[in-house]
Amino acid sequence: MARLIIMGPPGSGKGTQAEYIARHFGVPAISTGELFRAHVRDGTELGAEAGRYMDHGEFVPDHVTTAMLRGRLENNDAGAGFLLDGYPRTVAQIGALDELLAARQQALEVVLALTVSNDELVERMLRRAREQGRSDDTEAVIQRRLELYRDETQPVIMAYSQRGILLTVDGSGDRDAVTASAIAAARSRLADG
Ligand code: AMP
Image 1 (spheres, helix red, strand yellow):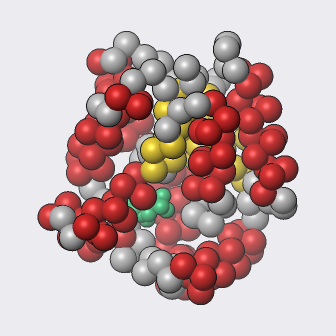
Image 2 (cartoon, rainbow, N blue to C red):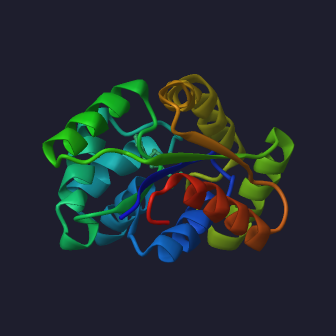
Image 3 (cartoon, rainbow, N blue to C red):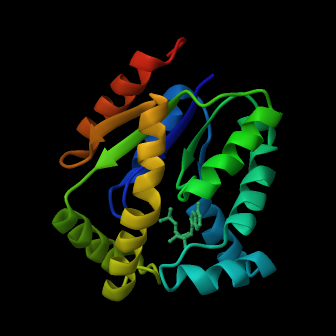
């Protein structure tokens, strides 16, 4: 079973790609952003706390995010494999994930990183804001999210690159083509892909 991570800047289409790639490998796509949005929609206490950060493009504190992910990974569907979307986003979260997986005697197999130019990202996010009305898609918030990605999440990509499990995929252009190259890249690394 595949244990994968997909990374990419806000607006890179990683959420959509995650769904298709996860379906291909028969594992659940687990998006911490989606989990938070579900809590916000359901009006839970966690949603109220997370929403305060999300609306400003800030990261939700690591301990809150990691506790939520731990709970989600305990679901049966994630027993053998999963595709994480949006976690880890900080170097501290890498360590937290390592601990979670070590306790399950599991290892990560592949980290996919989608690359998209900055101009295309901003344009895509503004379009998404019009179409989906996400409260964290205003221009100031978008800039903040891109800045955090560069400062906090790029080092995560570097760390996985040093571990030798990073695969970079060109995320610009046709959605189906991006999905196909991401799947091909991941399969080349997965024993039973
Ligand atoms: P996303 O849908 O992945 O773009 O996530 C939306 C928002 O949820 C982010 O801008 C953060 O506020 C929050 N979030 C999602 N994942 C994490 C994470 N791993 N660490 C901290 N905050 C997160």
